Image (tube, rainbow, N blue to C red):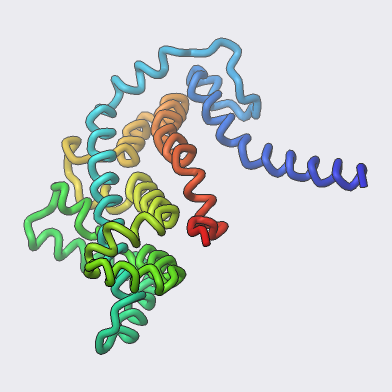
Length: 271
């Protein structure tokens, strides 16, 4: 039994190391000189850490502006997705109206449509609305998504009907029940939806690259392209910028980790 445990923990440690090593190398390369970073060596820590790379990275591109744009866009998208998903998920779970099954099937079916299919129609619509190189172009197309609606619909379906019946006796309508009772009960799933929405928007590259034209609306993922030019790739500064960019997502995950695990395990609702 002891030998089996050693093998299991050894395999887990090896898998964790393989998964974490690229991030360790990225952090190490961020503190290397350019010649040291571009060598084929797999050693992740530099001989002499170049802490000045951090300041040089922020001088190479206006990352303060990029971060503001990213947080504003991702935060607005996150809030919008939570609101639309809560309302649509509750409607599909608790309201009975003609065509609800067909409408829900169409909503789920939209998950099968690749992003590339709607890319050009979305871009044409954005330009005709006059939103090119603006915040609405970065926010509005992503204010709702079928996956989040599906998750919250399933969460509301798991709530006992007795909760709603008791709220009706106390004079609650649908909106009041959703705000006062339903949303707190599905809080772990709401946090999961918010986490996915924020990360999806924060990590987006292609759409922000296409619909923005200058640095006033660029986001951090687009800002990483500043380190690739005709003169070559400044790998050490790119890794430094990548390290800085990934820190907010790590912090957000660790903050929301408890709720994320609860939603996965289905322990958010106590009987």
